Length: 412
Length: 70
Ligand SMILES: Cc1cc2nc3c(=O)[nH]c(=O)nc-3n(C[C@H](O)[C@H](O)[C@H](O)COP(=O)(O)OP(=O)(O)OC[C@H]3O[C@@H](n4cnc5c(N)ncnc54)[C@H](O)[C@@H]3O)c2cc1C
Ligand SMILES: [Zn+2]
Image 1 (cartoon, protein in one colour):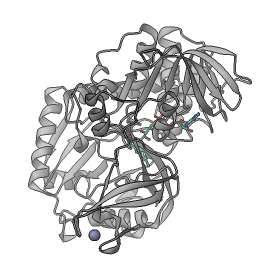
Image 2 (cartoon, helix red, strand yellow):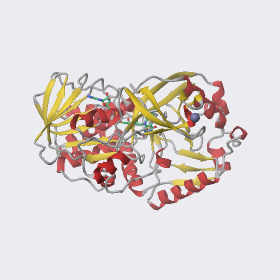
Image 3 (cartoon, chains in turn blue, brown):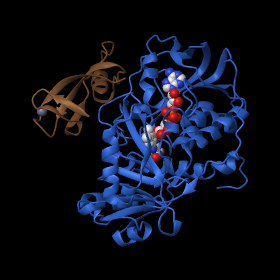
Image 4 (cartoon, chains in turn blue, brown):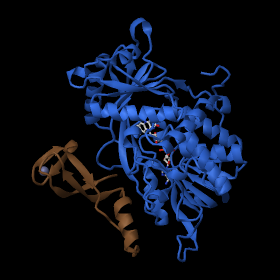
């Protein structure tokens, strides 16, 4: 952590919405706020409102397990997330706020020959693109995580892993607040407790029309550009302009235990994930063990948590890391995620003029917040889609250019 | 979470695969557009809905199931 950073955040809140803005961003999560931040700081576009129906960070950006990494399996994703990892590493210096960014390294463990093959291929691609991901065997894994049971409870023997060195974590709500404060300081209006209930368009004719503003429970707000950054609620927004998109909403749960200290008070340093077990764990700055598993199979918008997850997640955890048996679960919670069919995000223009989306962040989009925001800000400011996100457009489905990479997306 | 298979009775949701019932809007008239919509787009309803489930680790049959997603 940077010692220069101050802890007290002072955010300038907007009292009332103005009648009109250049840009209205729907959703005060990381993606919406980062876009506002980069619009203001990189492009001088400050006549911007972020409209959030609850409070900033109340969605997935304040509910995730905060893993930041770039060990993806297709070049477009590796490149994109590399940029995000880089921006995250510089975020404290840039904003002057502590986001508790910590480089930890991630072990992605496999228990099968097929898994090992996929992992080696990913490590090679990463290295070719300058990303530090190395393949490691069981002994090296044990040296990095002495707590691990290499027999995997006798059922999931640890056969190898990729070690992705730049993997990091950052405190999620601090990331949200750092972007919010930075944006507000430049004049961006952050409107909490304001719900978008409709989107107005004009024209149409043969096309899909052009956006003119948003209807909210505090009245109409005119805008030339509207960006939806609403995660699991994205289709409720795209429905407002009659736009159909490839997003389905699924729950993802997480849990946190009480404190753990290893031998001699040692912290549990790396992030550990198992692909076949669909489970991952890391330690928070407070020493609590933070873990998650798969997203729920049935589409759902509900924030309810379930005992089933508690049972299955802890059972998986204990298989690999038996010490977890002695800890207590303090809390569990749920987010609702925007799952795309190819497990890659969807960013950019839509057939409706002036209406943009950033979605498909699913269970993996915390790490993409800075690079997503930076690229969308550039697109909004210049009207041109930056090369970094060109492959991630909504039009890729019609063009048969899907970016299938579910194995790399995982749920973290 | 249990899902009720009409052929096998209540089983763990882990045994099933979720399927989309295509709801291609009528205003799409171009056949290619309709195909694209059917393959990729999702209605993603928030509220009561009917969906298709495939009992993958059971009777290997599709069935319709009513559920509230909100
Ligand atoms: C349990 C869990 C663990 C995760 N772990 C990781 C991880 O380790 N690493 C990783 O990279 N990603 C992870 N993710 C995914 C990550 O959290 C999300 O992809 C990311 O936070 C999405 O950010 P966002 O800004 O797009 O959405 P959100 O933060 O969800 O923000 C969307 C906002 O839109 C608002 N909104 C919705 N509808 C309206 C409306 N009509 N009007 C106004 N506002 C509206 C909502 O209130 C919400 O605040 C995890 C997710 C969950 C749930
Ligand atoms: Zn059956």
